[in-house]
Image (tube, rainbow, N blue to C red; front, side, top):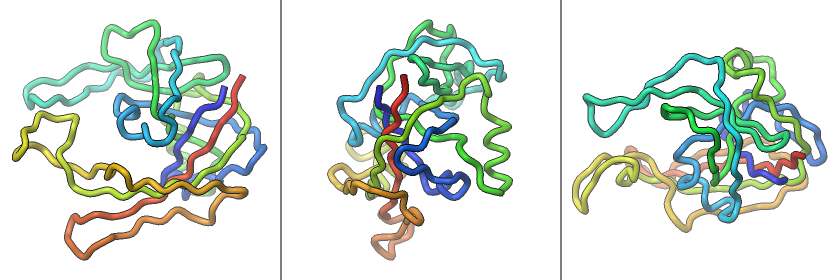
Length: 205
């Protein structure tokens, strides 16, 4: 099975980027915003994973109502040798269908405190072993837009930085890039910017 894994510019600095053919042992994650946020990467990618509880303590998820939050249990999804962490609303389901992409949380560490902390925070029982079969650079523009996760109308609502539809640019890579860029597109405060991500096609049994 091939799975898209996104590496952002922070993890790119914390962890050694992979090369084609590498066998990796990574800590991966998924969240409920991934299908919308990363649909442009692999629109047809989806999988159904068996779920078990992680030993990590419960967390709280905020909602649109400031007086209401939701208890979540850190959990582990598994499909064959592919595993990932996610926060499940209670009661924890026995299976979950995921799409969009997974995210790198912990990889081959560089010598820095952020990498060490990422491994301390990750559940060692959720590691994934796989082989890197593809590397792509994707560059996407973001701008302030109504946040689809919050209630809003045509002229009101919460705004946040969101990907701008139709701005994704893809580049197939033979080697990992030297770095991932992020740069402003205008001089406007909180204005649009373009950001690079490394997308790994990860093969697992």
